[in-house]
Image 1: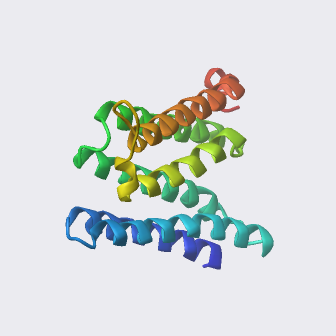
Image 2: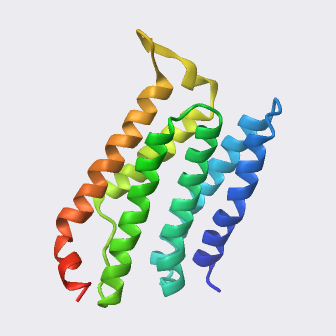
Amino acid sequence: MTTANKLTLIRVAIIPLFVIAILLKMPWSRPAALVLFILASLTDFIDGYVARKYNQVTNFGKFMDPVADKLLITAAILVFVEGGQCPSWVALIIIAREFAVTALRLIAANGGLVIAAAMSGKVKTASSIVCICIMLTSLHKIVLFGDITLNTVCLAVMLITTVVSGAEYFVKNHGLLNTGGK
């Protein structure tokens, strides 16, 4: 197993620890969850770098890396829903986009095609990571104006980047839906 794939699996292993940490609701829970989330997010950047630099790109990595990313973001969003920090409809849109883009990639793979990550998808991932980090701190409670908090702004950023990037994937690859990926 390559170093890049090991890093991806470490990210997957951190996810339940992140969820447990935040759900324990102890004084140290949010800081611990933040550290775990940052560590998991860093493995995403490092495993991609290692895979490319040391020619460790594998089919397992191509499959598991995006799955690990989706699991990490989904876990955070669901924890926020449970804690009342994220409306369920926002979570549904974010999670539905992940399923839809994954389905599109599977259709493409069926035809031997690979859909590369679009720049909007990278922006979505990076902004989601930053927003989730903010939402894990007490900063999320800061009132910016009226009754708009930093938490609300973070949710809006995640929602907008999710919808825009999802739309870009489908607009650029709409032909796959008619051809079954061939």
